[in-house]
Amino acid sequence: MFIKDKFINKKPIISFEIFPPKKTGSIKKIYKTIEELAVLTPDYISVTYGAGGSEHDKTTEIASIIKNKYNIESLAHLTCINSNKKDIYNTLNNLENENIENILALKGDIHPDYKLKKDFNHASDLIEYIKENFNFCIGSAVYPEGHLEALNKSMDLFYTQEKINKGTDFLISQLFFKNKIFYEYQEKLKNRNIKVPLQAGIMPVVNKKQVEKIVSLCGTYMPEKFIKVMNKYENNKEALLDAGVTYACDQIIDLLSSDVDGIHLYVMNNPITARKIVERIKNILKYLGENNG
Ligand code: FAD
Image (cartoon, rainbow, N blue to C red; front, side, top):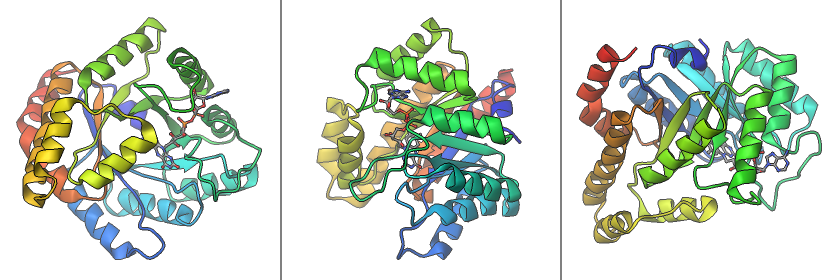
């Protein structure tokens, strides 16, 4: 099923994002993770794509297990800056053969070791190519705080519009820790008459070093309250888990109460945080499922 169609009945969409194991990691562990996430009946699970190359095939393999073994819709991430048209064609062909219908079309993170190729410079080039050659539902990434490479936020919005013009069906936001930033961004999209659904990207923080690394890469603002919580509990795993899940739930409940189209949880392959969050909000989701649409 196309993910865009899941937004039609106005029930908030809940999705999880996972990543393939690194070269040395066990593929069995990720299968166990999927099994535990599947029990939580998300609307879909997305699988990241290493722009560097080593985990490409694993993305297809994992997305296929989600879809074909667990009967849960999967969203395969696909990056383009270090691929040529032939590589992209082959990957899309493999995804299609595995019955995968949804792609998150991305430029990809630039890494000094990666060889950049010239066929695709931006995500919009990839979106155009997919729409011309295949029949996939396409998601795109957006950045409520602006993308780090963007000239300014207004140009970033201009290029987001470009991605939609080329065929993006729905949007997923970069993670954020302050909802006001997301609401202001929603308003900006509305002012540009952008109407495709937008899911809010939320990361439950259960590891201080991990979040600091991610924030340094994407420039997300960390509110004082958030920093205080991390600093207080950084040395106690269980306490930080409680605090991180509670912080994420506060954000999610506020977003759901503001009729957000969906929540995309960056679960970092940790089914425990996903389970704790779903458990906390299950009655809210039930209520919204029964009363929206
Ligand atoms: P683009 O839309 O191409 O935008 C990148 C920058 O270029 C922006 O500053 C934009 O304003 C500018 N721009 C866009 N079009 C043009 C144009 N025509 N001319 C000039 N400037 C332009 N990375 C991975 O490697 N693997 C993943 O699996 C992955 N998953 C992600 C999932 C989500 C939800 C998010 C938010 C990010 C993810 N990323 C992933 C990171 C992403 O690849 C990087 O942030 C990348 O730098 C930008 O990707 P994009 O698709 O948004 O790029």
